[in-house]
Image 1: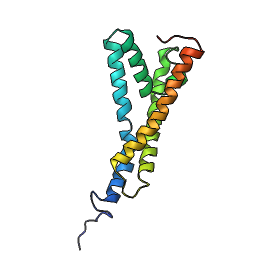
Image 2: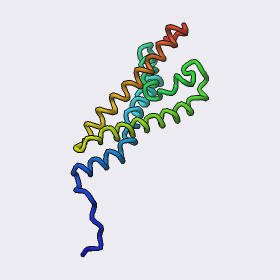
Image 3: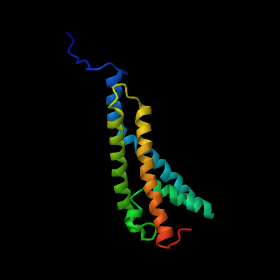
Image 4: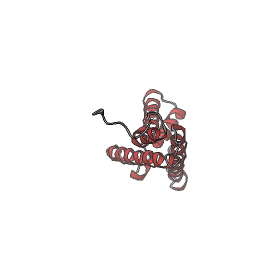
Length: 144
């Protein structure tokens, strides 16, 4: 007998995919917000038009959805690191929930994970757009 321990699952089999999705899923959920945040910073720091400013603001809020809860863009920027930390925790939870929900199916794949992730992200982004709507229309403070 070999002293090497054999895995309990077949590599690239259903259990292997389930383990991969559950292990890497929470961290992969940070990818889309990081990309949105990078594009937002690029738009805000490179261009000066009104369109790119609004686009950069919205993409920044999509990347860091805790910003409106801490008063952005009307508050000082000292609260932004706290909003970023809260948003990272939120996206990790979204990734965890996506991975758990996707792996309820015994034949789970990464497509199942991303489908679930985008539905959860869409709900967060709808809430972010709602907060921007409240800030501009109901409170009467102009973001434009």
